Image (cartoon, rainbow, N blue to C red; front, side, top):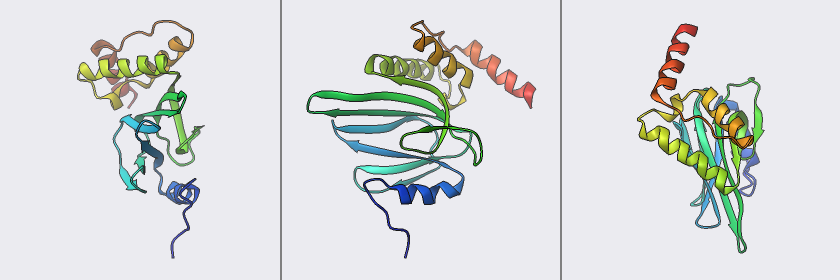
Length: 172
């Protein structure tokens, strides 16, 4: 008989899944109450827990955007987006709710105006035709730092992307 799963916390299921070398993200979707979703990122595997919850998993090195929004009878109680790089077993990482074991957090935004700004930046890069997973991690850090300081982040362009790709080739 397999491990007993507490569907309220899923700790047993997530801890069992931790051993496979992937980063696991628990997603919940209860319309207009709790909406956790992945905005971009290549999912390596998916496990449906029930009609409202599933776990998606990412290979080490994969960059993904994890969006969380929740409300109660009085309005929005959380609005957050994290852009995260999945880490390999044993690699240093930050903890993040609903992400096991955690990840390299490249960008964090809380509060709807900031989250919306990040989602607009993601849309803008996507409109350029650039694969969002291939965007320079330094750009996401730059965006986070400038936004945190209340400054306008630099837009990601094809020139910046080309420079990043060429830098990656030289480092190999």
